[in-house]
Length: 138
Image 1 (cartoon, helix red, strand yellow):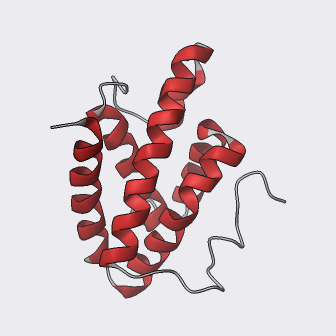
Image 2 (image 1 turned 45 degrees about the horizontal axis):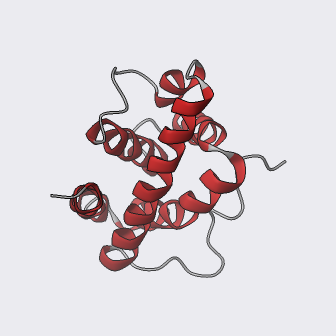
């Protein structure tokens, strides 16, 4: 199985789990997943993860936490992430070449999460709330 097939398989399972979270949380997950690849490209993996983790403090079982967990599992599946704990903690001390590899893997994984979230949960509407709160924004 290729790495891309693994990403797709994992993302399908993750989106299916997210679709069972209840309509509001599932839609929020899909909205966040839709924005995730662009956020990572624009702001970097670390800034995006820190942003999502900051949202987890108010709702540790919410869609933001689920998305960070799903991204962490994808990185672990690629044999990049080696320990538990917050994903941001795994990223802080990485040398730049390794951080770049993690970021590239995260972009590919996020694209699959986005695709399956749209397919299984639905496309976010144009007034999606993910645009209202972006990493690096005010």
